Length: 143
Image (tube, rainbow, N blue to C red):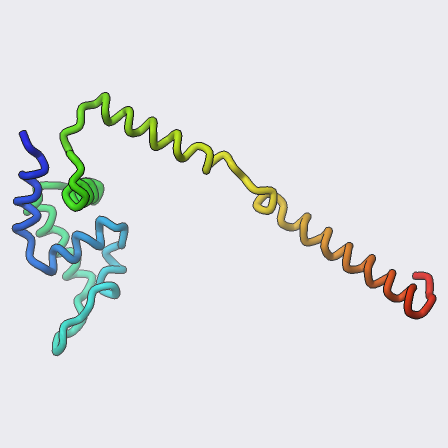
């Protein structure tokens, strides 16, 4: 069974406005953000959140899905020609590879993120010490 061809046909049934909303949802926009992100045609008023919810319901029924995660999967797999009928072994292998790519990024923590206050105090102390040494050099005063 060719899942991609099936979903390509279903995606083709969407109206242009539904396609725009589906794309924004797939990229992670919330239903409340979508009216601000959509372009307004000349002479038309902006759409409301209620309209976006109606369009989302229509998208879900046409694609026969129930969740936005399913919409994301369908959108990106069809957009980038990724096969949706991978075997469980291939899926697990893909997850392991992605985790191996992400683990170094997740485990590398910079010291600046851990103790930014310590760094600020140290630099303030250095500034005070250098001010003292400047006063001593200029005025010959011991502080």
